[in-house]
Amino acid sequence: MKSQNWLTDYLKHAVNFIPVIVFLFYGRFGPGDPGARWTHAFVIGAALALVHGVWLMQRTERHSIALGVDLYLLIGGLLALVSGEASEAWGEQLGPAAVLVCVLVVGVLNTLCTSSGFIDRIGAEPARTRMLSLVMVGVTAAALAVSIAMRHSPLWGGVVPIFALVVVRGRLQRLALQAG
Image (cartoon, rainbow, N blue to C red; front, top):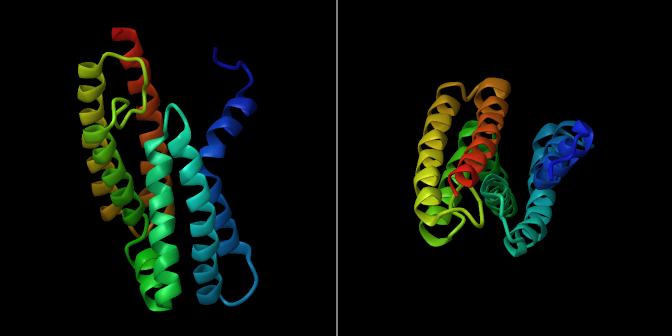
């Protein structure tokens, strides 16, 4: 049953993105010069993403988008440990497109390897889940194209495409259950 309290619903969704929320807050408001601060933010984000990803993988219904964001943070954290320049290229030069590439990879793998697919819905008809997951792959590819075109705008290249994916995923989950 869905909660009627919008704040509770928001917090339930926000928990899926705790590592990236901490990463962004530390990167923006943490101590030190911006280069070192973002490098440290990637390491902190990667540590949180590792724990968070394990938690998500143990849930009955995973969250492919959140797992993709966690993958982005893990790669960024590993690059930060190897080279500050590599971390900067991953986070700044590729911009939000790198996040969407990771979401796309996780979504395709979930579509191919799990019964819940990219839409992360257990209990729906398998053929319907697969078809709706393929729709989600297409929507993610479109979001990636927007992100690449708008990569220098954090809002239009990052926030809007990710938010759109979360909204579309929710709609596709409802469609999967309606058919079943």
